[in-house]
Length: 147
Image (cartoon, rainbow, N blue to C red):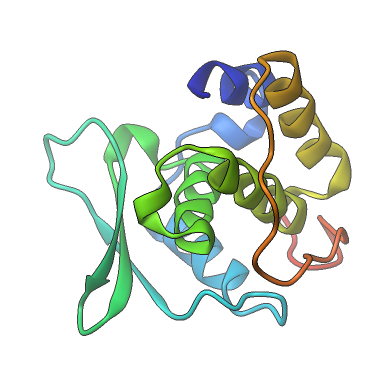
């Protein structure tokens, strides 16, 4: 699964490390769209020594919490963590997560770039699950949010 993400996005501006504030604002912008039905989130910094980012449900009074590590403050990581929120953190990286990942990428990056991710999953023989949430808009940059 991680290899498919690298195939799709490595070497693009989506994998460039940005400030925590920029990536947190990017994530919050995505969850304010009309298609978002997964409830509120809070984005926090991970511990200063953390190397990975995480998503946990039921924290902060029932609000899902995303913790971004410094080395992973990228738009691609934010979309990955938001996909955990959409699919439900308990599903891991299975088919439902992968469908949510492509859907969040569609909203964040547009249909073409989300297609890169879907194609990478297909090439790795990782199937997409069924959607249990509203279908996202494929507007992408300039339509839903500007990158």
